Length: 260
Ligand code: COA
Image 1 (spheres, rainbow, N blue to C red):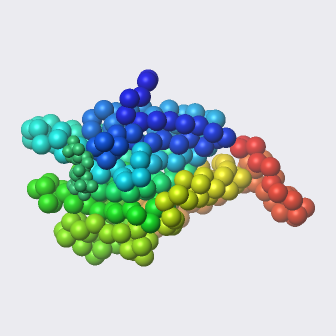
Image 2 (cartoon, helix red, strand yellow):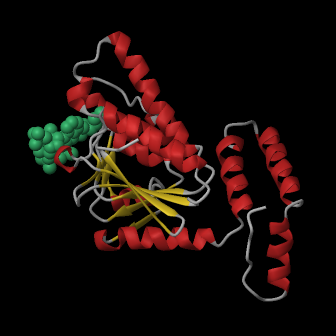
Image 3 (cartoon, protein in one colour):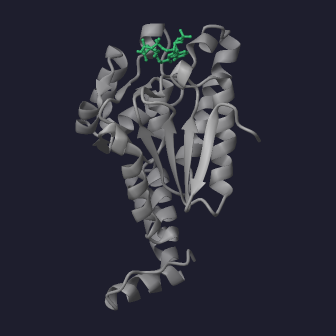
């Protein structure tokens, strides 16, 4: 599939996906959602890709939200499947078996904030503004924002962000745990790449199981989540990577994992 609204650039096991509608501050219209869905399914199934960066084109916006021009034309019957299509994309991104970092390089509002929240980590530039302003438009967050935000920052803070509709800057987002790290804008992509390169040195099967255990286990009752974790722990003991990781430590050398 040829993309018109996003870019995918691969280098050394890391794919960088850029939402590329800078004249509309990278707003998520139907075409962008469709291309991102296709792209993330391809990334999921592509063994040459071991980590992903998601960012926005230009220096002003990550993604300034769902496309309000399109939202304005929704009928009640169209709005529910539209939300579900966006939610499916967010679930696909969150479910990738390899780390995905959102490099939040400016406005991350509404659907843009929801997109960032679906990624496993969020690194922000110091000019970033994050928020869920949907109620100012008479709608609510529909791409998972009412569900992922409280899971990330707690119910009280999520209520405040959603009900006040007021965006917060990168420093505040970092303070409340909505973003993991903050960098000057010029350093955002290099720092994100550097963090992912380090992760590429870790056991690939362990990384995959860790993502799964946190994503699915955190939705289970504690006893079931612990059981889920222990099952992965047991499965890993059967891999060559575990032997390599332990042996490398004892031999005081870097581990060379094969991914099995
Ligand atoms: N949907 C559609 N178009 C959008 C958009 C969105 N979510 N956000 C920005 N744009 C468009 C603007 O309409 C404008 O297009 P135009 O040049 O054809 O008029 C262009 O992007 C630039 O935006 P502009 O508003 O001129 O930039 P700004 O610097 O003055 O303001 C924002 C930036 C982010 C504060 C402002 O664009 C905004 O409030 N956007 C909507 C944010 C929002 O509510 N998102 C949640 C949607 S559910």
